[in-house]
Image (cartoon, rainbow, N blue to C red):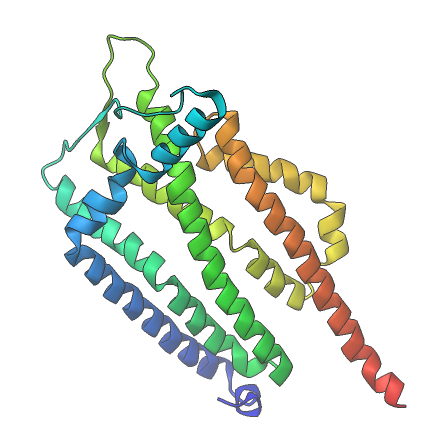
Length: 277
């Protein structure tokens, strides 16, 4: 759809176009969810219950680092001191469905971004369209990086801390299935979304709602918000909060540079006609 054609469309016509983009994005999510649903053994035994196993990649890595640095096995994990149980009759069926939907959303997220780009691209100039295409591409990459960061780093730390924490030897940890899967999926999805910060800032800067000077002015306030956000999605220990906060702070600084670059380009476009005169 050309830009001129897009400008001549009514509000209802824009809604109709948006509806079809949402339908295609939803179908992609359902398709990926169906694939995840049918791949039950991989989805649960390998992926979701993987961080519960002592031989998980992250635990083996931490164990190797511990041996190299301190010649001890302080970070080595022999077993995860909790068991997972289901207490509802339809608990495993309902869990299977909603976990498949979350997996479908994660797998289809790059395509969802692509449909979003297809909706907004007709209203952009040729140069903006090419630039935004790369933004959408890196948006998908950042999301997957966030998912992997959460899965391989934050989830193992969360399980190891929360699963082994006890108030007394008289109390055994028998974790409900929904509680376990909610922790894994929430942390993983949350870190994936948080890593989209540069993309969000790009579009806010394009619309003029956010400027680089604004982001610099409220950098200290943002650090506090980042620490609070990190505390929400991680177990209550300082190490996990720092691990989450560090990449977010880097992404925040990248977002400032993105906003500054957009402002510079906008000023250049505004001054261009004056130079011709």
